[in-house]
Structure formats: C-alpha cells, structure tokens
Image (cartoon, rainbow, N blue to C red; front, top):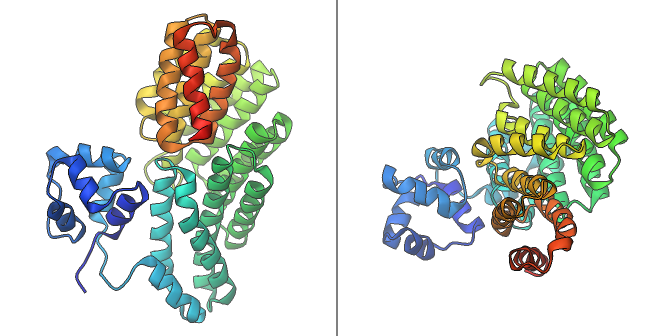
Length: 388
C-alpha cells in the first residue's frame, strides 16, 4: 500500500485539528495537507515554522515526523491488535514499531495536555506488558522489556502530570514497574531514569526532600554504571535541588558543579542526551537558589536558561513561573506579572502540573497586592486554569 506520514497525521489529531482546520490556520488548501500526509509533497521551508507552531512541536520534532514514512499496512493500533491475537509471533521488527510508537508519544508529552496522550499511552503500556509475558526468545523479550520500561515511565509521567502532581501512588507504581523491567533487561540508563522520576514524586509530590535525595542519589549511582554522563548530570541536578530544599547550601553547590561537569562530558551518542541541557541546568540551579533564599541569583539563572528551554514547553512553563516568583520576592511586581502571564500562556496549551503548582505558590505571595488590577488579572487567569 502507498506510504504515509502516520506520525504527522496522528500529531494533527492529538492537537485537535482536522485537515481542514489545519489548512485554514496555515492559509493553504486542504489538499495540500492531504498531500503532505500521503507523502506526495513536503512542506516548503517557509511554512515549516508555522506548521510546527500549529502542531505545537519544535522544528526538529517536525522534521522527524516528516522523515518518518511508513507503509499503509495499517496503523500501530491495528498492528498491536494483530499481535495480541498472536503474541508468540512478536519479533524484533514488531518491537521496533512499538519503540517508534513510544517515541511519538514521548514527543507528545512535552507539547500536549497529558490527558490527551494518556489513552494511547495506556494501550501501548498494556499491550507491551502482555507481549513481554508471551514472547518467545530471550532477545525479543529483552528488547520488549526496554520498551516496557519506557512505556511505564511515560505512564507515570502522564498520570502524575494530569493529576497536577497529586496522584503520587499511581505514578510511583509505574516507575517501580519501569525500574524492574529495566533491571531485568540490563538497561541501566532506563533504570536510572525510573529512579529519577521516583525522586520527583518525593520532592514535588510528597514534599519529602530526604527521600528525594536518596532516590536521586541512587539514580546518579546507576547512571554512573551505565556510562551515561547526561543521565548522571540530570540526577545530580535533583540531588542539588533536594539539598537546597533542606537548606544545605554547600551540598547543593557541590552537586550543581558535578552536574555541570558531567553535562560537559556528554556527547550525541549518550542515550539520555536529550533529557538534559544547559537550559535545564540553569532552570534547576535557579530553583535551588529560590529554596536557599537567594532570589536575585535565582532570577539571573532562570532568565539565562529561558532561551534554550523553549523547546521543552512544560519545563519552560515551570521556568517562567519560578522566574515570576523570584521577581516577586525582589519586589519587582511588573517583571513578576510579565513572567507569570508567560507561564500561564504555556500552561493553557500544555496543562503542565509542575507550572500550575508554582503558579499557585506565586498567587499566595501576590495576595498582598491583590487590589492592583494587573495582580488581580494573574489571579483570575490562574483560577481559570482550574475551571477550564
């Protein structure tokens, strides 16, 4: 059958566009969108930024969607249904298709509301676990466990984010499953990522920095064994944040320095390279200094990290909200309001739970100025996020 760009079409549907509405937004004919999805033509360079914006993805993600051409032998859901009827027939090619589907859903996590991604992610996670228990051949089972670890990690992220970081128990159960699957298959980087996510639950959900410190430290240890400098850097950043939450300035600064050193050693071959960047280092360091009572230093770090944080929109929303909080504590009300409006703009698209929680914290500190029109507008917009 004719090849198609299934990922492009799926992304269009995820953000709520029909072919007609996307064409109208871009100022092109509907048949143009049809030809793009059928691989009969490609978007011209001048329209790609507008298309990426309409699909709420980065230009890099859009390029991957356009490059991913599959035959028309059926959607991933159809292939999963066929495998469910013959689970013992799963082979490495089927695992590759499952991995591509997981990559697509992971791309959606940072740009779409988690509630929109959950149904597909839940089906994938369930099917992969079923296939793991029925597959023949150790090579296939090991490859499936890698996908199981990734899909369980994604499910934990989605459920926790959709609950605005309140459903700690369910998220943790998925991360535990991911860690076990990764450990059984010998993928230390995937196991480290699961432990790192468990540290997030302790730090930002349960408010237990001591437990968060222990889990992030364990993730850093596992990442060290895996050889992933990027994963170790990410874990050390959250070791630093846990230390900051407990008021341990020296421990925090030492971990930040180690994280920066590890990040400098990461290369493009590192399996976790996409998980951490200089922008994330600035964002977490800024958060650390907020906890340590240094809003001026926090503001400088957060502002410096914003330009490179834009590609990860949920993280970008958190950075903007923290920047607003830092400016508020410096009594820069106009700057705080500007940053908080930016954070709300991001949350209205992504519904990211992390930024919402920081916005609520900022709203509590804004109450002293609630008679100001600009402050009241921030409070009203934050309330609207809850009732939308």
